[in-house]
Length: 192
Image 1 (cartoon, helix red, strand yellow):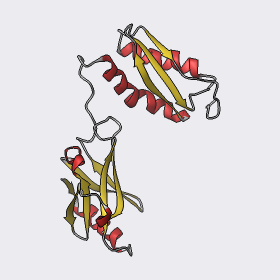
Image 2 (cartoon, one colour):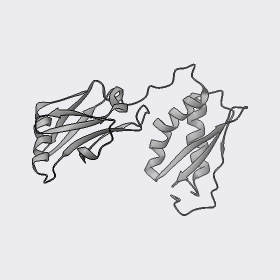
Image 3 (cartoon, rainbow, N blue to C red):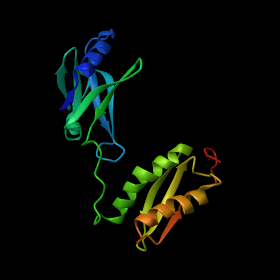
């Protein structure tokens, strides 16, 4: 499934030795698998409480449990230990966890969604905001909904025109306009 370096295996086994729980395992999941924002997570679990779709992978001092649906995403993965001063942490390289960028001939909606997830939302997240694609009209107008810190923000027009619209139209010249369908009257979480 995935390979684990010897020092990472020893580190995980030591963590299990510190626990007083029987039937404890290491559950390895891929959140948002197959998308550009996929992440691999490690959590303690009670092995006999897992669904039947989880398979056991025994290691020295512990067992890892992986859902069958994540097998492809974790193929060729490698778990290693990163040491930074006195701090130790596990790292995983999972080359198959994330989805591939859409090809040039992919539908516009697929390309816009990919750009929103990989580029636009990570930038908006610094202000606690995000944007969702509502639709792309027959005229190639991209209709968006802003949320989080962007909903009701006094700078949302600037974000839309100078940020999102410039970026999307620069990448996809077939886009005619970017429209905001957000109800900005709710300013409860607004950034500004």
